[in-house]
Image (cartoon, rainbow, N blue to C red; front, side, top):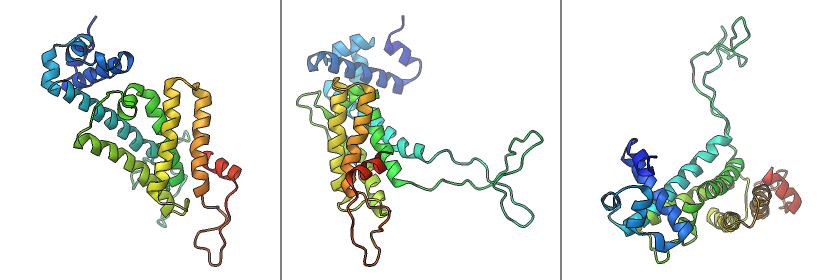
Length: 268
């Protein structure tokens, strides 16, 4: 049976690197920092110690690479989440009639199937609050899909590790995605009463605590998912702008949204 290293070799150096990192992360979390030696990792991955020294420069470089790999995967998942809330873009524009108007029903063949017509693509309107919720859900999805990396990134799985400038920048970049999502809600008048960074800090504190408990085994998945969404809905509730009273309404007086209504609106 081929080792993880031998299988990865067939696909290229990037896959070899990923296979070694996955092996190291699993060893670290299941057996502790004492198992994180170049010789032990090489033995588990099925490669020589020379390969690890060549790719990472040794144990310290490998630990830094674990951090960077974890945040790279995390960032990809966070960036993909809002796009999924917008639905699929239309691949073809509706055809125009002789007056230059578009037939939104489109042309169809004799069997009733739509005939593709070239034209500009349309993008569904943005929903900042839905995209913020999608990003928060993606945070939990990542922690459940990559619990070993999550522990390296956020739970101090490697005692004494101090990330370098590149690793720190990667962590900040992923957090800025949350700040950006909150800021979009503020700019669209969906949230009020705090800065983007303040609200993002509160959300991060909440979701990190929730997923840390879940991946440690304190909650079963169905229950955890419901409570996770209820938690971030409760954090957002005080900042939600009542839909029937715009922030800039002349003479308007702010009405605090009832807690139950806030949670229902945020979590739906």
